[in-house]
Amino acid sequence: MIESSPKKRMSWRKRILFFLLALFSLFCGRILYYAATQKPLYVSPETTYITEPLRKDGTVDYAVAINKQNKIGITPENNAIVLLSQALSPEFTSEQLENAYYAEIGCLEKPTYRKKFVPAGHFGEKLTADYLAEYPINDPNITPEEMDRRQDCINEIEHRFDVECEFAHSHPWSSETYPDVANWLDHNRQVLDMVLLAAEKSEYYNPFIHGESEALSDKAVEYGPSQIPLQLRFVIDAVQVRGMRALDEGRKEEALQHFQAVAKLTFYLSKEPDQLIWSFCHSHIRNLRHFYRALIEAGFNTPEDLDRCEKIIESLEEFPSLSEVYDKSTRIFVLDQVTQALYRPYFNNSSSTFRNEYTVGSVKSLFRIDWDVVFKQLQHNIDLRVSALKEAEKTKSFAPIEEFYSRNGEQIEQNYETLEVIEYIKYDISLSRKEFSIRFGDAMYGLCGPWQKLDYMFRQEIDSRTYLRLLKLAIKLERHRLQEGDYPQSLEELVPTLPSHDFWDPYNNKPLQYKRNDRGFLLYSIGADGIDSDGQHSLYYGQELDDICINVHYPLPEAKYERPEMHFPEPSNKKRPVGRD
Image (cartoon, rainbow, N blue to C red; front, side, top):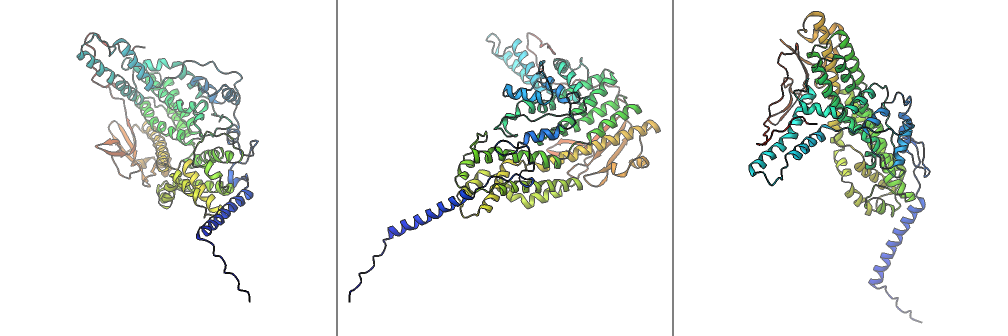
């Protein structure tokens, strides 16, 4: 009988090598499976929201889609942006984009730009430069004491100008009282005249124009079209300051024209499909109460004047809600950014201004993304926030937003730390393709979705609608004074002509606070903190007082508004010429 030779046992080194080769084969097999089954995005409402028009590579051109939607009913004759683009002289990154922009708004020829608008802050810097040109601080011939005095002057010049602009923004004023402010308005006269003409137009259409590889939210969009609303927020302040001067000088029709222009330009800002610009309009709605109060105190309160003011205020009530802005524009911005930054480079290696070593390069090597799942998860994240905002707007309560944050806060924080999340999922090959894609969609929304400060922006919306409610009620109180000879003792006297919900405080579901005095009245809401602060809205000893109020004094006191006293040291040898152009 032949004895069989003993089997040779595999050495431990070969076993380890074989095990590693098996793991590597499984890993490569999985990658090959992902690569073989990788499919492009299926364009549908569930994935991309907007399904046309498509680019050559099959992705949606969101800019063209938004322009097509917003352009309905727009002509060069009724579009305010035609005049605003001439007045504010936007700069473009290329002549090609500039030509495309003016062709889109219907300008056959590019406008000849006038003197550029100079915001108040920049004009304050000009005053400082003028002072330094006449009194140089580095002059070797002056004494140290004189140098210190000139330095004190420099520190005060811009501060005083800011204080004067703020005062002139909320009170009637004269050129003799504030010569520097008058010079600032005169410097911008051509721009402001054209802006007033633009405010008479019925429509506002500012198209998106960007390069082939640029996302809507890229920095490149800050040039050209986006410059107009960014400048417009400062122009509105200048229009209000000029209206206050007309009010002081007794030019009634001109003052009312500026009041209407402030409201119309503010409404233009609210129509921009961008959350940040949308938020700008709310500060101007708050400031509009100063203009109205000044008109009433100056005696411009005939029935005809009040009718005009009421129509102006009612037109502002049509501004889009935060949920509308978030549901459409924010959704489009997120989908477009992910498409431009990730999806397009993933399939065709197109250039992208979005650079991140943790995203395209590392994830693409795994071929694991199911793009339908990624984009559906993006939509799901947006839907959650939109539903919370709609519920909050319906109930005029912060509770739905607070509940949303408490329920989703941990996941939101995780998604916001995008780099860490992607670094984790990049190496976690245990996840299925669907799980991987869901987590990747969450991570992308954490990076691209502006979910932060929704509660603050919602408060802006509610505050603005409360201010408009107060203004409408103040007009009805003024009508009562004209008819009955005095303001009512309480709001209940207006009930026969005023639905009860029109003088309801949205922050506590109780009547608005109304206090009559011997010179007028104080009308206010208790604000978001739920505390009645007697109509105060300011910072007082570190505590924020957030009542939303309108304080009307009638008739106008005999004492005129005086220039605020400020310490302003002058050089010992010469006096600074105040108000030099």
